[in-house]
Amino acid sequence: MDYPVRTLQQLRPVLQGFRKSRGLTQAQLAARLGISQQSYAKLEAAPAKASFERIYRILQLLRVELALRPIDQEDPAASRLEW
Image (tube, rainbow, N blue to C red; front, side, top):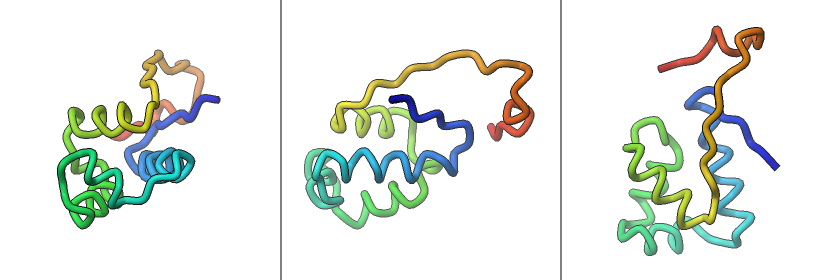
């Protein structure tokens, strides 16, 4: 199943959902990243502040594939993208 993320705000629930579906706590995932649970909690709460490299590493640990594809220009959400 695909989970489109078109805004940075949509990334938080996606990360939380994948972490929970893998049966991992924030502390467990933080340990795998080599950071504290508090640091991971901040990252998960505001993923827009994290580096792409850090987000990519989290996705790897969660065994989530990142797929990029062009947005259909007819899609009204395309005009609301935040960069």
